[in-house]
Image (tube, rainbow, N blue to C red; front, side):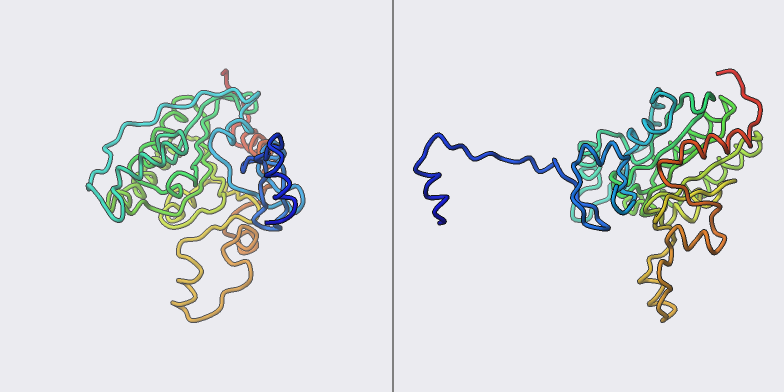
Length: 284
């Protein structure tokens, strides 16, 4: 015991002050400590190195819609735990824990509101909800978002973030790939654009379906985008992959995406794209 602790213990009116654990955020790229409030106000982007951290659905909506004014579309009702799946935990218990932690029903949330003066539908996947994984609820929410966009004659803008299909739903999760693809076809048949913003990370079955089918493909800086993981690919082809492989900038250089846009510029860039794609503003 140090002399300071001995003195503190002998003086009863000295109270140890506890520091809350959530006051600071450590940048996972440059390790800089950032005051959490400043980090959130900076849209979860490190002010020192520009690293784009993951951001939830509500924070994303707040940063995009005009005056932060929007209405969240009700999540579709789907059958939960259709396979009665259990690994180390019951799937039903995992869902309960994820909902308690996030406050959301599942990984994909849609919202509608004025965006650059137009009624627009935007969907956001939240990686913090079971890795943003795609199951029945995500597939149904995607289809519902497309239908809402067709109804209000707006593009459907989706921000993807996922580890892939949800293993606890087996083949039912994989069935969401053709299901969402059919919904995109309906959007195009209605003459409306489909814009994808790939965020970190977007992988697996989500990448193999709706994440790479946009009329315009945008990515945030440094986002991990791919199907199989880097180690799986290296062990399969028995070669070392290039530096930055599967990152947004590498995909842009190799023609896989159209542009890389920082989070601070995303709103203005999307509004400009909508002005090009839908030149005549329609009444809200």
